[in-house]
Amino acid sequence: MDDMPPEQSSERILVCVNYGHHGARLIKRGASIAKQLRCPLFVLVFDSLPEEDYKNDKEVDMSIFQELADDYNAKLIIEKSHAHDITEVIKKTAADVYATQIMIGQRVESLWTNLIGGSVIDILLHDVPDADVHVIPKSRADEPEDWDFERGVQAYLLQQTDGTYQLSFNHSEDVDYEGIFFKHLNTDFNNGVFAFHHDHKVYEVRVKDGSISTLTNLDEDAYRF
Image (cartoon, rainbow, N blue to C red; front, side, top):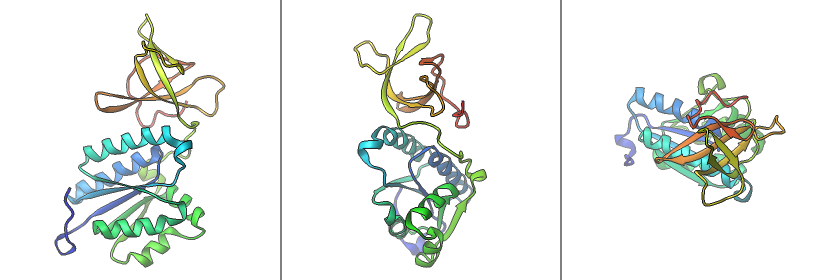
């Protein structure tokens, strides 16, 4: 997607997300609005999480974000910075893409506001006067209240004779799929979600007691157990 100079632009939407599954939902919301307005869409992913602790989570999220950006012909922008720099990052990105509308999810806006000790929205309204700033409520962004899973860990699937798959944390030559396992917080067993790449797409499948009955991709509202 080529940038347009200000005098040629109409509406240009910038969606600001953090890592996590709510980001995918907000991108889809922004894409829906961009389609209605027939305008360019830009997605800013703000990365303030430590690489050593969240490497697996980021790998899955970024694959999903890139896939969505490709599907919606959006430009994906990744900015690695510290949490207290969020307003500067958004301001700079908004100026770079000539954004006329900035969209932030309610849950993420609350998180960023707590981190910087002041209102992200108030700062942006003051410092980016040429853009409208929108906080999308949880209900309209379809954001979950919580992401109830532990940090992702490397894992593998081995197909069984009955057609199911067994979750394993030990790599071997006969593994069928390699990916990331997210264990549900409220369980002592290996219940959760396994994410993996297949045919240039990211799939997320349900794991129950260390077993996967089907590789059917989970619906986005199906993460709760």
